[in-house]
Length: 602
Image (cartoon, rainbow, N blue to C red; front, top):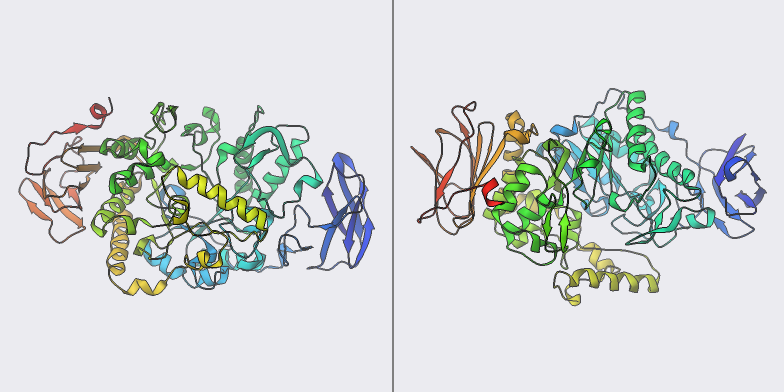
């Protein structure tokens, strides 16, 4: 006998559709309807009919072979033969994350096709592969943040078995797998949850409409729906961690916040499985409570994305000041980001017109995920340009060096390591003309904040927009892509060889800089990263040391330091790494005004 169950407090009657006939279900405790049926095999299709209506997919459907509007299919997770029994994920604190979108990472756009490129990631020095959302969404193409069947891997990528093959292959190559999950909203197309029960509440509003019901009437089952989903990815798909999208939109006034409940349950699951499981949060609040331990009143996440690190580096490298980049641009901001994780930690934000954030005092660097590029920061541009299109190779190398020698967990976005020519644009496949029009209008409003014109952004619904985003792997063998890829490899190799570069010790990180001279020096336990962003040569008076790596052949060592051409970075090892904090001095042919971080931020 097989039992079918569904939570449907809004229904007066529920039927199971199976083998072309409808079988009445019976209400039980907590508005859970159930029925037992004999002679049901694995991979059987089924649906639920509420109050005699049309067949609807199971809210907890494990498999949607015919898309989000089709019938659900039973799945026996025990049928897959895993080969990773001895796998143990490396610690996130010493990790290097690679974010990829399954649909554009290869020409085929499938889980299996990703497997063929894992060797590249291993050679690069990646430890954690982060997949953009893979839960089933409308149409054949999309970013995945409009998922509606949260328990079912997208069929176009290869469905449940394809995802398991990819995770198993990653583990065989020594790569941990992080899944991006979206619990703050569901997609607008094919979302039937509200017909079953109060999965959403108008008690709170989000950018996507009514909030997910985490603290209103009947919220317990909604919370359980999301918690069980998180456990499923980690247990049944062997994922090593989750990245939660926009947790600031998970509005919960309960004494036991959903995020704290989630971290407890994942911790308990890890203990039962004997595995290291990681949780990463994305938030725009600059709130260190996310990563503080529960004992200290926090939620206990392992890390959170820091947009401030990206914004500070991006604005300094590109000179852009539109939109939220208006809050950034100085080397003082870069220095503060590198030393503290947040630039806005209670300070006034001109872009927001109010004070923003809270100090992350005592939070180690490995609790921040830093990046120069990611799906949002590239994809939310009108033309989806990568940083390699916005700055020269020399300046890009400077930014990469600062990221990969910082005390944070670095994240790379697919193709950035070779300066991929393909843009990463916003693309959808909703199919519905009215919804497609609404998406275009919303997109135009977002772009207007940055001063971009609507005609500069391709139509998200056009198949051609998606096709332009597929990576061209043949670029790797051609200049300047080869040169940039080698720079990433050498930096990541250096990071592995020198533990001080990935230890997260913010208290052993210092930065000196000169706004007028446009130079900056990052110091980390005997490693010195000297950067010249000026248009002229810069001379740095530094303690005696050994040159470990330079982005250009024109770097010259001198008895009292090093000379750097424009847009160049050099990494040196001090002869005496145990000596007290050093202060760098640079000049560009004029009197240099040296700034300490604390003085410049006053």
